[in-house]
Image (tube, rainbow, N blue to C red):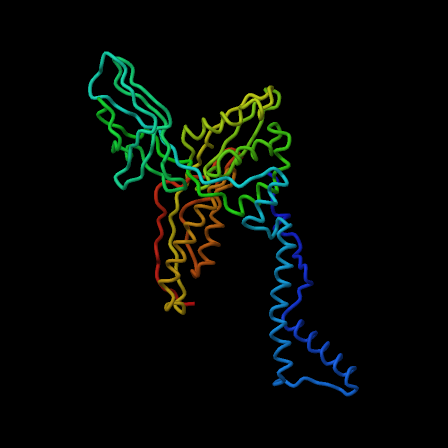
Length: 384
């Protein structure tokens, strides 16, 4: 999609010409002295302890606050500065509204105690929970046909936000609302799709990119824009096309870096395939990107002169590695150990020996994926 950097790098604007409290005080005192000098016919200078000077300084503080309100009011009309409700109103001018919080989804398999000669119904809204009381409710009525033993149905977390994400297969297994003849229920897919209310930064990016969606789908930017509009939990999106074949391929990952599940993939494909969005000539595919795996194995050292901060630096290195893993999880971004080295050095390490990863190219529809846990070895203190 179009890069939002032009907005971030736009010149800073002041609607009050960067006026400071000191400048306002000086102007008010100068105006007072000039007026009183003209009115009295003799030179008037306000001493530091003058009550009149105190009054003017107090008034200057309130005037400066009022000017700040003026400055803020002007800036809320600019995408670079706007936030909260101001940003939402700015978005309305381009037909963009803030995405609400969404709930995670999963596919639940219900199993009957024994096959029956008639269908066994499972009401919509039947709840199944995890051991730590995260509830999922079925989205629609489902039934196990006569002679059958199982049925699969999508279910949505009863809480919005990222709370329901990342629950592994089999962990949603406690039936909260028993249904006759149903012996067990369990999720057969990991959960994802939950997202908190769209942040100001993400909303500002969509407002900036909104013109890409004016033609509905078709152009690359439009497909990528509309994919993010579908669900706030969707992160990086890449659209490619074989124009001669009329085929459009969409790959995406979730905002938290996780791989989308089948339910989210199907939902996005259905949304983009609607007659109002997809050109009739496009054949659309939606999938998770191919993953290029890498490992992290390294040893780092700290300057002996920094021994007093050794524990803090070790914690900072751990956070730097976590941030690198998140940074690396971008579709088409090459696996770059130089970035990892730089991050660890910024965290305070003296030096770092990286065994893995090694540099590897990642094509435009693939994404790097960490295999296993990062192996970080602290090599100890070294002389400067």
